[in-house]
Image (cartoon, rainbow, N blue to C red; front, side, top):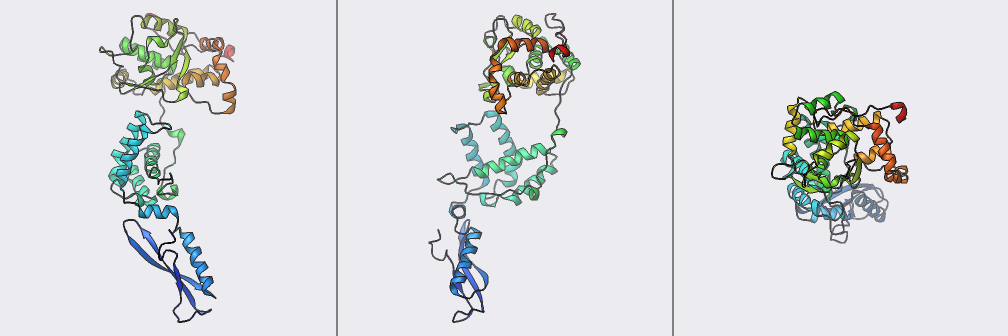
Length: 395
């Protein structure tokens, strides 16, 4: 790029001959998106010789990145709006070879774009989307009453769209150094985030105040810690003959099967005896989904959510998952088993070294019986309260 005429710049003084005491100046051409090149003049100060002045000008041009590859790409490529690039980015995400994005994630990102990002930034050129534009977007979202975590997540889509614009070598066309202090990025206080859970009494009340169809689903969620999509995808063939072990291998989103959330979500879950006894009766004669509509399709999350709220408990399905986690923690179950049963990814080298423990079925069954369900299953085929936890024995 610096071989273009005028791109390397030239030096001059306001005198016919070079003076070692007079100020020197430099001028060069620089590119701007969508317009012809412009010439810029800078002061170099007193330079004893023309060579010194040329060196100073060269250092200035290098510091400004005028002739850098990224500057050339960002100013010479055809102008593209943020909306156009966002559309291309969303279309490419489910098709990419490395870690294709699941439909649920795409749905969330598209909602963020449609509701907040595109109305503010959609018609701007990509080169114009920087800290100032991001600051404007954050101020609008904050004024709209969005929670700090939601604002952080939605601004992440802006960064991802901008980073997806690359050249033929995969280098970013619009590299940015984001200044979170300048843009007013909120700090997420995890302790203040809303994470509703349930107590044993509340779980029992839910099971007693809804139909058997939904009570069965809620009992499975509370007794296994399954994600709602994993529970929707359950089939009778996913259980062992005694229903004491469940193999999770699929999930459902918007009525369609897909892979579970992460590789760690493909797992085996040991089931407490009282819940297993109920499931052995419940799966009889069911060849398709365990929780299904009359047409055989997976039970709708929306309908299940309405049934849950009809019990008077204004929580989401994840509250059952948190309840199960708290039950396991109260029983002091090993973290290896908690991670396995909940489908959490191993985080340390020690976790990887101890992965063989998860194959010890007798050890898993022993801890499953110690923990129990943590709630009673009255009303579901007359099953009695799950065994009480002996903390001294569990320790």
